[in-house]
Image (cartoon, rainbow, N blue to C red; front, side):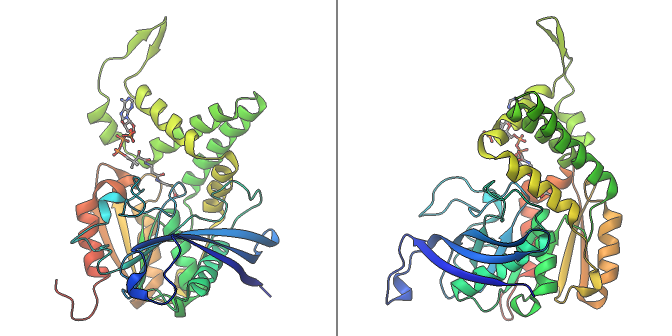
Amino acid sequence: MRFATATAIRDYPPAAPDSAALAPAAVRGEIDVRLAMRHAGERTLRLRYELVGRVDAPVVLVAGGISAHRHIAANAVFGEKGWADGLVGCGRALDPAHRRLLGLDFIGADGELDVPIDTADQADAVALLLDALGIDSLHGCVGYSYGALVGQQLAIRHPQRLGRLVAVSGAHRPHPYASAWRALQRRAVALGQLQCAESHGLALARQFAMLSYRTPEEFGERFDAQPEVVNGRVRVAAEDYLDAAGAQYVARTRVNAYLRLSESIDLHRVEPAAIGVPTLVVAVEGDRLVPLSDLVSLVEGLGTRGSLRVLRSPYGHDAFLKETDRIDAILANALRLPGENA
Ligand SMILES: CC(=O)SCCNC(=O)CCNC(=O)[C@H](O)C(C)(C)COP(=O)(O)OP(=O)(O)OC[C@H]1O[C@@H](n2cnc3c(N)ncnc32)[C@H](O)[C@@H]1OP(=O)(O)O
């Protein structure tokens, strides 16, 4: 039997004891839980979350890719840049005046957990977090990339806690070609470790990953300049950009976090028919990581519970983060409450 309990909770800033009206618009907290993991036995884990928005508003879990975290967007309490600033704000589908937004750090994201992590474990952790926060059910889950995989597991394992799922750029199984790319990225890390240059390996892995998140069309537009000869070596136009992407990633990511979450994508495999809630699948034509054909299969397997929106974007797998107006329009429909204006 899977065993899971929440054992502690801390909030920042501290919530006002007796008045919901005085509660801050944004809180962060962390709880310790015991979780029986699918491949790693029972573990004590720390779950970190951020909740933003009107306290009586319907709650929407917003879960991003493996490099996302609990801070979805800048807000009055926590002003630093979030990972999806373009999708949150006044008048948006994800407007904290009308929806309470729950963000979390995936288990494993702190680099402390060096074991195989299943998307089912992530979903069970979400359920424990909801218990600890006193949230019976979510109005919806918007999951992008890895977050979409976790959303699928939530919809399978805890359907009573979820009203609807919007799964963007995440299929019921990884495409074998994408898994092969990720396996080589992980080998780049291993090679770096062998050379006592772990961060170089991680940076290289991220640079390869960036190529899979974007498209040849975008690179063709953006990096069409002549190569330069620098210190006797040829340097192509995209290299500065890739170097910057690698350096940014290394500065904020622990190697174990990258490796274990990358593996977790490859472990993911669910039966679409088992997804027990209405699910909107959003696909991006030209996504090199999650092909449209796999998302069509997912929707076919969902039967009457599934629907599909297809975007065409030069940003490929990153379209969720780049095509924010178009994504917002999709979310506005998907997350609308009865009686709310279009
Ligand atoms: C299954 C999964 O879960 S996989 C997860 C998938 N998704 C991700 O992890 C997201 C990956 N994408 C990124 O991280 C992207 O950088 C995004 C989406 C956050 C931003 O993309 P864009 O808006 O196109 O920014 P862009 O990629 O052009 O630039 C990123 C940074 O590189 C810098 N940069 C861009 N071009 C250059 C260049 N030629 N030389 C040096 N630096 C450059 C920019 O200044 C920017 O730095 P800043 O963030 O400090 O402003």
